[in-house]
Length: 119
View 1 (tube, rainbow, N blue to C red):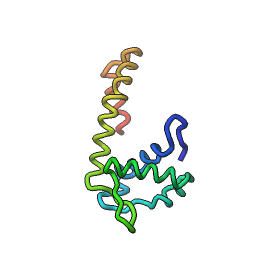
View 2: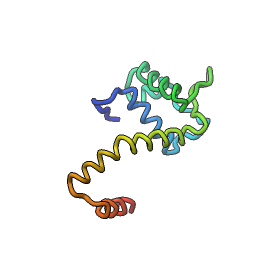
View 3: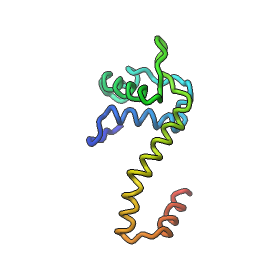
View 4: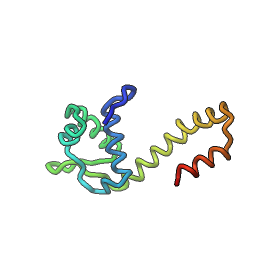
């Protein structure tokens, strides 16, 4: 995994595990890799991986079963998707619309490209 210099590594790790949940790699109540396994997989310090797990736990995406590890919280996929949709609608889309207006890209051209990308 290539890390982005503009975003803390622990947030990128949390995003990666969230991506895996959204993609269906981990479902409700599935065990996720241990903090150590996760850190080793991405060649980061265990403390950095723990920081990502702590954040996801606080956000109620994963939970800890003492002695067994971390598991996906019921409804985590939907929660992540809702949060990401809100972020997209409030942060990303306004800039896309601004760029479209600035470049003279109409909704028809946008819709055509959207249709082509779905094939």
